[in-house]
Amino acid sequence: MRMSAKHKIGILGGSFDPVHKAHIGLANAACTKLGLDKIVFVPAHQAPLRDAPTLTPDSHRIAMLRLSLESFPFPWEICDYEIRKGGTGYSIDTAKYLQSCEDAEYFWIIGSDHLSKLSKWKDIEELSKLATFVCAPREGFGFPISEAPKCAKIIPLDFGPLPDSSTFVRGARSLEQLHLMLDKPVAAYILKNKLYGFADT
Image 1 (cartoon, rainbow, N blue to C red):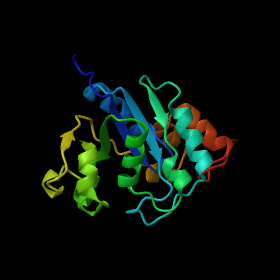
Image 2 (image 1 turned 30 degrees about the vertical axis):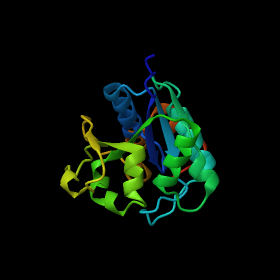
Image 3 (image 1 turned 180 degrees about the vertical axis):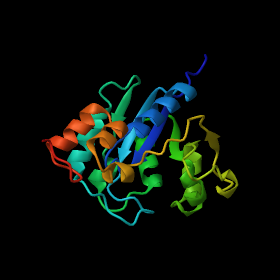
Image 4 (image 1 turned 135 degrees about the horizontal axis):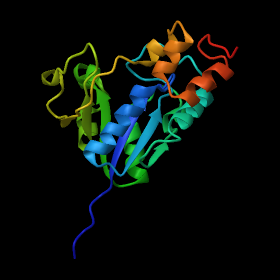
């Protein structure tokens, strides 16, 4: 009797403060090119290698993420494990949690800016056994795959590097800039709730 193949599930973590078009475009590309059955978005409470705390309450970040995914063409879910857990969120803990929820083949999606940092991730050898890393180019960081730990299996993702980042969004100087980087529902939510110094006029 032929055994059925495990589901292929992508994981995209981040502060999503706020979620922007590059996040969604990256998730779309991963689903399309890797044939993922589902993608799980994991909002961080506090990332271990990020000194600055998130600027926006968890409820707003999750609400914006849901709005941005309204028209996402692939199966998805938002996992609030790290937020519920509180404190610093480690990828190894999240991977173990997701594996306990569904025995699947997991693909952890990262930008090339993380390649040189992977060796500092907690229990990277164990994490590398639980998930394959899928790496997309990040503008200004090249693709230093030789700096990644040998234990990590890395699949390059053909995805055009985009300059957008949550930092750029928060520093937008005009509504025009804001709308270029965000889906319309997310931009409207930011204006309505007066986030990041913007307000609906």
